Length: 531
Ligand SMILES: [Mn+2]
Image (cartoon, rainbow, N blue to C red):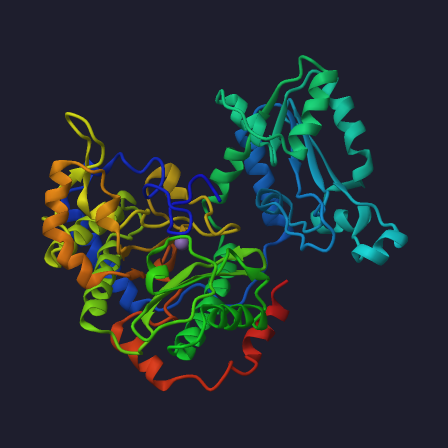
């Protein structure tokens, strides 16, 4: 997954790079005031991103290419689409940045833009129309089809190598958007496996030894960090379908069923309502599995005493949602389950109060960490909010916060074409209109968490004090994750359709399920109406 991914299912470190500065510009008072303002927005502004839409227009894709061209110097900009899957019969999914620049969903395509003294000459390379091949692959739009789609001159993808070879001979630098892991790694003095795109560029470089090749993926990623209204609307639809799947799964949860039965119901609900696929591997983790961040075997029979974490997300027309709900298999929160759940819910609320347009994104993280540490101290799972443990051995061991034993991932991440999408606050350290992101605190009480600490005299003392409380809360993992979008009207919680308060969840489970929901005509029609 993305390097900037910070959620539970990729396990990163923080709210994202570039968020550590600027905090001091804002007094505590100001942030409280913002907190109040966002609170009002959450209450009053229920929905202002339209459900149906206005797809991304040809003009919108063109403006993204123009934005890229403005940010790079003269040269040959080459954007590679994803290749036809090497193994037969696997589904094809377009490379996100290529889709972002072109709107094209066919394999083996490329965009070449030659920028020279203010002039730009663009060409789209696509698979040609070949009836004998289309009998196997399905129809292709061909060169005239791609001209209609993009407004750019089309050529056969078969001609791409020769065209690149000739451009490499002109002495212009190559600025590349694509799967160029090795070229990016080499720029940082590292090594990586050479992808198909790397190999093609290697061949050019062998023939044209002075050719300069610069990956510019980061430039496109930064553009992707600010979502357009059309993109926010697609994200919202992905989130609504995911919320529906959460409700279905929560209603259907009973002890004795297997995790895979819930997974099946969730993914059925996705596809039934027009989602392309799960945006990432569905996580249904019960009991001890609720404390495993990347769990996705989903094959355990659920016990009545289990908590069940469901971290799921539909991809809708290429845009990802990401919602986590956690519920007790019994349908009723026990004291220990309630303690941990309410703590995590309060932490999420603390972060939400800082989710304000213009405010430093760092404040969400700081508030969440503070609330989490004080909550864990209250439950005696840590010695005190700022207590530490030895996280290395030796004469003067490094100190790590005790709360990190139970909360190992970051607070959230951007969502968009990828479930861990670039988000503008990674670059600007601030939320602003066009932001789309998650807030997903968690607490995971692994049975052997105290044995994860290095064996030092001090850690043995800490373990002695905490053990009985870890035993009381063991195998309870709780994560609550919601999705948010920012427009010039404020912050909207897109995942409000999935209940998250204890009373709401208990009511939903009490009502139970009478089988998968019937056809949702409104959602299917919405799919029909959004190109
Ligand atoms: Mn997430």
